Length: 384
Image (cartoon, rainbow, N blue to C red):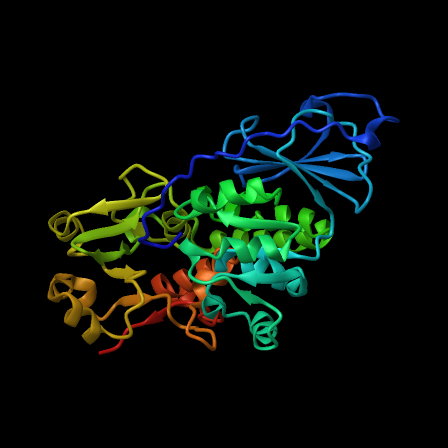
């Protein structure tokens, strides 16, 4: 989910549970999603929402018809007509939830539902002031490091649902939580290709928290902002677009956004010419230094250079960074402008929900006069 982070596609392992719902007796029996009202999504490809009387069905998975299916129902009432296979059932307007990634936190803060969060792995990573206040009040339990989150604590907390990311540690948590009959939402937003696709996942959280109207209005404003910002640079000719390098080295491998990634899309919309825009993929590229130097030495800007504090720290870690023109010209930008009270980067918490702000930051970097009134939200230029 980062500018240069390797993304690992997670293979879903949840087994579907056949449920016969007592509340369906008065409704026409059916097991066909196509008979239900499908809520239109403009960008997100990783989930679908269906309206079924006063219930919702959430199909979560990259391919329609091949995802995990949850019934979201009013507490104590399941007045739905769909009677097919379900992965699980979830009460609407859930009040006890567990999240496992900072990118999921802004959904709660924007939907004004911070009080629903009861536990989180390594809460020091959280930057949101409202959530940090609840942490200080001991209202959010620390589940330990993410990959080894204390499963026994999760089970004992008896949450309405747990949201995990669809890569990395997901498989370690999934089976035991499933066995404990705790609904697990596998969040695959990192697979979305369009910047607004990731942001649109707030609509899924809105259904789970019983705040669909608020989620819709929040996303509508973000979309409006993004489209307005993109229109500023849309007609800049290719020859006038500054060249952009991204990513950094980690153990001699240079990780950078692939052609169809979230970050590459924003660079394009910001009026930049990304040097790896022809390298296929929707996640992260793994490149050797020699290839990057050959293709990126003359790049005019370097955006997303890890979380270095200054140029001196960069060359202290790897002297080869100094070989790039963008470094020599001091046009290196990181996403470290804002940190939370315990050091967490706001970009990694909020940036994926607010691609409109990320886009304006990049426009101000690449075409300063076209975003003169915008104040940087996430990016900063490195000094000596």
